[in-house]
Length: 222
Image 1 (cartoon, helix red, strand yellow):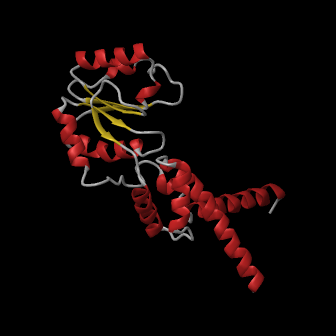
Image 2 (cartoon, rainbow, N blue to C red; image 1 turned 60 degrees about the vertical axis):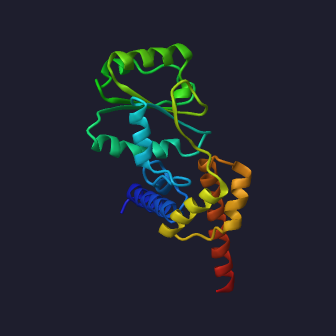
Image 3 (cartoon, helix red, strand yellow; image 1 turned 120 degrees about the vertical axis):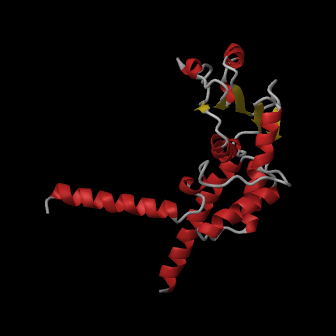
């Protein structure tokens, strides 16, 4: 086996090790990304109620909440229900400082369908007005996520509390074991508040540190 092949094999083993490590951490993005982790509603709310509210508001509504609180995850829960009801969906996720929609996006709105804009707050005032005008002309509904209330009716305001965060962590640790304790979760929530994404990032690092400590202790006792 030549040096190049040895290097490739070593890289493959290293990559496989990293992948295995990610999958052994319940807070890795493969477990927590929108769509991978089911959305957990607070109180007695459910996805069916959100869709019913959206329909009652002539298919115009906003999911509101701070950064990282689960707005995109809720969208991923709603989309299959909407499509299952025969609603044509046109969707886009906007990134930081993306003030305008991509060229041609507004020319392909589904008539009597639904346009979904994740990150609506990124758009400038004139672009928001243009989007709503085009939706009205196409008789197309509009569902958005936003960090703050807009003049689009709010369907739900997300603000995950400590109890809900503990439930989310319990859901994740039921899939993959972790040395993370309820006290760790409470400390992370106290630091990051309703930003569940940052809580998961923090708990990912804590999990890795604790696992390294366990391996070090195990080797020392061997």
